[in-house]
Amino acid sequence: MKSRGSFSRAQIAFLHDMVMAGLSFPLSLGLRLGDGLFISWSWPRLIAADGLFMLVAAVVFLSLRLYRGIWRYASVNDLVALTKAASLTVLAFLPLLFLATRLDVVPRSFPLINWFCLLALLGGPRFLYRIAKDRKLELVRERSGARQVPVLLVGAGDSADLFIRAAKGASAQYRPLGLLAGRQSRIGQGIHGVEVLGTLDDLEEVAAALKAKGSAPEKLIVTDDLSSAQLRSLFDRADALGMTLARLPKLTDLKDGVADKVEVKPVAVEDLLGRAQAVLDRSGLKGLIAGKRVLVTGAGGSIGSELVRQIGDCAPALLVLAEASEFALYSIDMEMSGRCPEVARLARIADVRDKTRIHQLMAEVTPDLVVHAAALKHVPLVEENPLEGLLTNAIGSRIVADACVAHQVPLMVMISTDKAVNPTNVMGSSKRMAECYIQALDAAQDCPTRFVTVRFGNVLGSTGSVVPLFQKQLAQGGPITVTHPEMTRYFMTIREAVELVLQATTLGIEGGQYRGRLFVLDMGEPVKIVHLARQMIRLAGLKPDIDVPIKFTGLRPGEKLFEEIFHGAEAPVPTERDGILLAHVRPGDLTWVAGQLDILETACRGKELDPAIAVMKALVPEYQGAQ
Image (cartoon, rainbow, N blue to C red; front, side, top):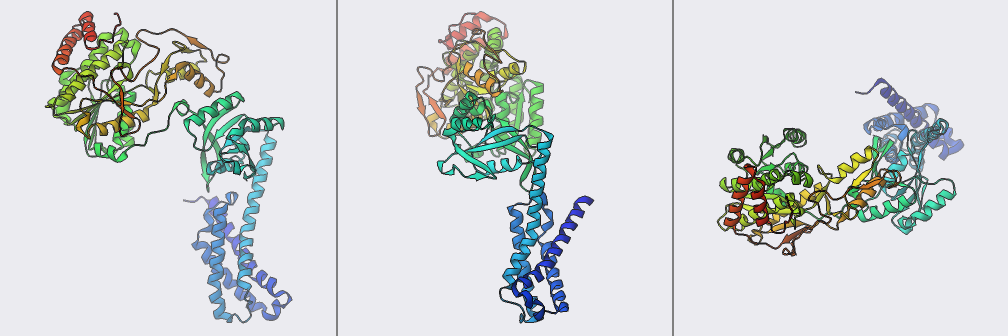
């Protein structure tokens, strides 16, 4: 419902347009006929014709709903609407004027002159009003003394256009000094008075020239889509110039396509460390999940919850969330109730170490697909609690796999880790043991369940990873703690990792050549942790080692400097999908592996460490750690 004030303004605008329409008719005749106007037209005849013109104009204006716009934000769209209104009014009036006068006293050029006059009288006051309001806002801003941050914009497209228009508002936080375009040909051109000063390659020269004029930019705002490599380069160059970097502005409080408030989004560490996304086969994912009953273990964890989100988006017939943590299960269940309310969903508290519970759950939901993401993954904690790590990661994975076979589940996917390669810790060894068993099980010709194992490295932002830790330490003022200057890890965003896991799953079930094989996600180039720490400090607008110190604490139990994604005996083989590689099989005898896991389970449940370590060393000879 419109407020009284809004309705009154619409009435005033309508009255204004009627007056302008009434003036345009005699003005047009006067411009054409001059002193001969009153020779050809008597006063009564002129008034009657003008009244008819105003009546036609009223009908046209109201039918085109000209009074929804706000004069303060008059734009090209409003000009188009006014042009349409003037054209229809003149075209509709001419037949009526013909019936009344046979056009014997109407010059042939009158319709065109009338159209120009009407359009000028309708549009002129609107745009003059906007200019006056813009100038008033500038004066208010100058008098208030409110400081605006001087910025350079990267990009000269639609987003830059909207940003500059928004920055003209009284409450705008930023003052655009210039634009950096992607093409040399744009230099010298401008958007709303803001000139293109150079290209990305000219950043240093442009910043120096502006500084010499007393308007040094303090922030670089990216309005175009740039690759991660370009963002990293821009971030380093801006930092060297003492500028912070932000990305594509978020425009809020929109009015007729223009915002009077601008918020910019800081560049995230994911943007700097990410890689070009692989092209995914969305149709394949739909075919894998749509209409199927899907169970996800560890559904409340970092990887598990993202799996749940993406699986839910593919319209499964039933989505079952299995999780040992009550709060984690509650959180993801509540999120999915809002995200995918149409998807049937069950939330079940279940520990993968509880064989009876897992078999009971499988019998209850009869899944078509099981995605096993439940694991203990924090290396130092698992090192301090080795039996718990082995029981969850190795025995728990076996329990889930055996339950899938027993209940004729067509497909199971297991999430593994790069720490399973040449492991120096219990966590990695426990995951390698799970890989051994599931690879051997999948290679068995009489197995009714297909198994797909996917291995990848660290994911940014996951629970217990370095990014949340660094963010917390930054919030506390530092120091940032890094274990070793040479500590290096592979990184991938959680979303990309999960997308590729599901993509690898579709690949793994397409042909028999993948039975017993292990898929490895292409993690790109490894990143030094200390470099990541420095990036995050600079993203916060601070200087490493000056504002925030970096402290090296030494390797923790079970950690190694470099992670690998392939064992020496697992030469990588490319697949037909970008971003997904295949590891050569290291075959294992299913009977022997199962027997060793029987011994391991007995030792873990009996809290006997030495026999458990002996089994681990037998199954994972690369592991040489001492307990």
